[in-house]
Image (cartoon, rainbow, N blue to C red; front, side):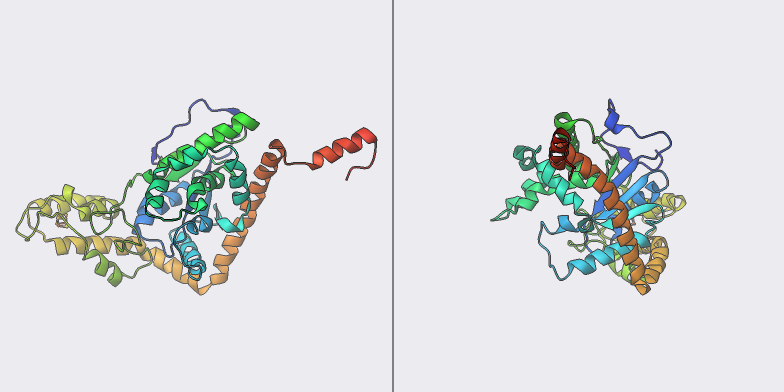
Length: 364
Ligand code: SF4
């Protein structure tokens, strides 16, 4: 399967706008909201996959701060969260030499394109989005930004004419809308945008340490990618296990235990048979089993902590990475936007040039 995980939306019948020139790599776009230091769920569900994709694709990795402001947030905390996520990106191995790493609001072309896409996006399509329905259900007043969130997502992706989008399963519906927006726009104004295909990482849905809900910082059921070994153990020791294994002498069912599914992602594959065997035979207790998991996590995260320490001691390096990423992103985004504006009839200076040609006067 290579760097790609499961391809959920294979691109069929590629059009001219979807071809990549021979010798060039396909382009990838993915974004993450600035929730501060990344956590284990971010790492298993996205970041480890992004890190691998850098070898095979031209990658754009974005901190989507303009998406973050459509929900509850604290303006005073947002800058630190953005910076901390950037440190996490670099710590886990996203490489500014190979990838374009930037902050969404530094490239205002995203929001301009999203406005232009609003012109081809039916409100009914937006109202049908499951995330919109879930998030708006308990709000007295629904911000328009929540409804238009997937249009901005489409602009994030299509402004770079990305071919591939690594996504979580919960984002597949938004990606299908992106493809629909690309189709509608291309049909009205001529082929320009590829219909990007979604790739869901092999890790799939990562369940939190509570053994019930998706791993998330706001639910407190995860552990930070830059956590120290003691903190990792403090978090992992609270993890829920097979509910039928009450005493050490009760035989366990690894297939029913979220600790075991985390072992599958993080522990040496050669050790997994022993973990299953000792669980089923009730020869190892859950505390010891969790200790092995905590050690596996600490070992995986050790180089991340080291790199993060370096970046935190040189914060200007992080600023430089993000600013240089934004410059590169803007130059590509500008090219797309200029073409979009022209085709949508917003390049009004052309009319003045035509008039000057007709009258023989000097063009403006
Ligand atoms: S021994 Fe490990 S796999 Fe088995 S129930 Fe306990 S924590 Fe889960």
